[in-house]
Image (cartoon, rainbow, N blue to C red; front, top):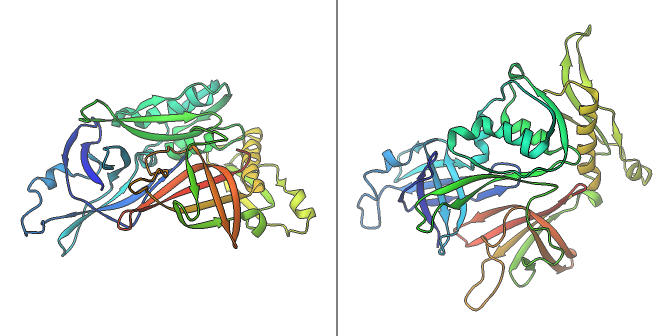
Length: 365
């Protein structure tokens, strides 16, 4: 059974509980925002108003909706983006997780010389937005020092800048997690976390276990290496140099997957644009980082799993955090797999009681 608590976004204070219904899936992703739509019934089974205060309590961008399980563990959260009213007995609230707030904030002038990428640059970028919504920080030093110059005139969003920074070679993971602020669960804390070189408990013999025929009921495996969906020629693209005539875009040195091409794969090109990058060494580092992901193959395993029933001890949603490794065992004519992979995301389909952890070994990590 899921419960829904409405909190103040800035303070985290719990205001009330409401009987929301989840439409579609709730999603959580590492280094990205998750989404979900919550619908509030206006009337209960007897035809009485569910609440006469919901309009004042549930305000887009003022409130935070927290979803908990029957043990009051926080499973998901979302900031209502808008309030949709139609000729029905439900009011719908499309939501995004707190990471999406970084999209709505722009980077001011910031200069970093030999600054730590997590405790220095990343934290300073997020603090541009974080001070407005009461974010806390768990960003230990990574030991990787970088130079960065950001200009307000570049009109770059905080969300894009932090993901550009995290995606370079020798980068890091990040996410924003919620936790209870006290034993009585009267408010939530919102903590920005980084992990170098990754977040989560990367154990070769993890406690989290998924097996087809046990707690796995279905799977979807996307193996880019064998299907050839990854590019073999990668190039980063930076800003336009207006000092040249005609103006030209800064291009990184192409990186070619010579191994795959030599084995008969046709060349497939991929270019990714990085706004605010003005020098050749930086765009080359971005290019190599993208190539490491592409050339390693982005093998993604989405599992359809069920929570344990009485007397069972399966891994349940809420047992793991993003970045933790999990042991997946599949013995099926379509796929034989026995692997330990990081959990990089999940979705929840509440009307069926199942959830879908997403496991992936992307690039060199």
